[in-house]
Length: 236
Image (cartoon, rainbow, N blue to C red):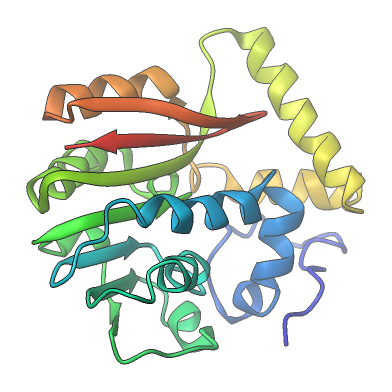
């Protein structure tokens, strides 16, 4: 049973960095829904979008699957198809915390930068690339493209930064307001922000759009934005 996120309620003695350990896993669902605007909507829409792309005898990859919410959404939307699911995460605690199973799912403990992708009709990476070292991001996106079949779809959701310093401040303030609406205190918000420094590193929306087009995606569309969180739909 998911607990209420209280990790940052009390002052921390050390500047501990954010990690996806057992403590985070135990509150993850509560944490992400209270921190990321429209997270549930993104998960549901990823599953709905997948209906148009998942093909029999192909692979679906959930890169950075965490507790499998997106995997579950894709399964729910494609019950009439025979396809393979590769749900990958580099946190053993996350994989251990997944509460469902399916014979078509291959849960894989691995770094997504080291995985060979193939025969993919649909790939999703929701709020994961921001935790990958910036120096590895372009090669990871190239590997994703190479592992996809023609006319397949890649959904990329990310927290972003903006060219304008004032807009960055504006969007960060609105995300903080969203957290306050969801009952996080100023202390919790500040301590979480400190814990994520150098762990979650944002890029501009244009950075992702330009790289995806350069790699070879023929359609790259931003289909969602809420404050500083976006999602991109890319077709090979």
